[in-house]
Amino acid sequence: MDKTLLSAHVRTLARGPGRSRNLTFEEAKDAMSIILSGKAQPEAIGALLMLMRFRSENADEIAGFIEATHETLPSTLKGLKPDLDWPSYAAGRTRGLPFFLLSALLLSQNNIKIFMHGFNSAHSASGSTEEAINLLGLEVAETEEAVKEGLDATNFAYMPLRALSPQNFELINLRDVLGLRSPINTVLRSLNPVCAKASMIGVFHPPYIALQAQATLRMNLGDAIIFKGGSGEAERTPLKPVKMTYTRNGEDKEIIAPALLKRTEIEEPDQELRLEDLKDIWNGDIKDEKALCTIIGTAAAALFILEKADTIEGAEQMAKELWEKRPSLGEN
Image (cartoon, rainbow, N blue to C red):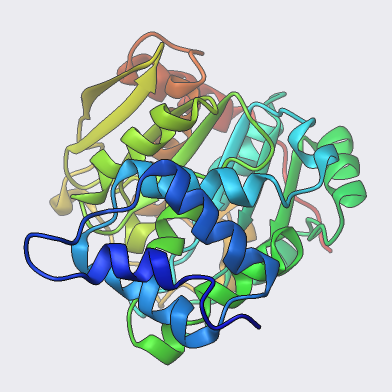
């Protein structure tokens, strides 16, 4: 390892008041390329990522990291170009059940091809996206060939980050060492590794909505709809209006998705829901109005960004109709 490879970029970020600045797109791309090559010292990587987070990373830096990562991805993945890219990187202890998976399943059963990728650390108390996918009888794709087969057979494929980008998997796990999330969390949400027509992006902190939108526009990798979701997942809460930013035709715009359910209308289930209950919710064996509205509202956001409906209200009505026609899920 060369001890000096990242030093120029670290100096740029940390020279001190009046002299330090953010990295340019080209500098960020170079820094990420060095990191992904495995030639950088771990101390320098940690310093660079934490300085970027301390200064607040900008769209050029995120786009530079994305460009460098894309150059390491298999060309077969980038050539798939499904309808929807769906990152899943929430790892908070308060993360609820991944109802958004049922939204994705609903869409995939109606000829919308979805590529999902992600990583949920042990900090997530309710289980990982990957565990839920297995429980629903879907496959976890560990290779690009398996991704293509899944998209062809079921219109859905999930690839864990460890298989998609082992280098970024190591970087995102630095959270356990550094005690903080790094810009890698932002990068992975806007990565769109399959060059899909659109992306579903959830954030935990609302200020990152603008950054994700700017990075998406900077990279020109397709449209995106971005909103604060459950613990940072692209999952819409039904209990209050949700401000959503979306990119289309080189511009970013805002819509307000109305609340779908009043708190007074919620009937508490007899017992706390578990990951294993997702299939019963789909099949209607467990009635949960909040879960249902979450599924419908999340699917509607996807239908809207894919231009299946002109308005979010129209997309909600379409999602409800699709839900009413859904087939049952059998036993694994």
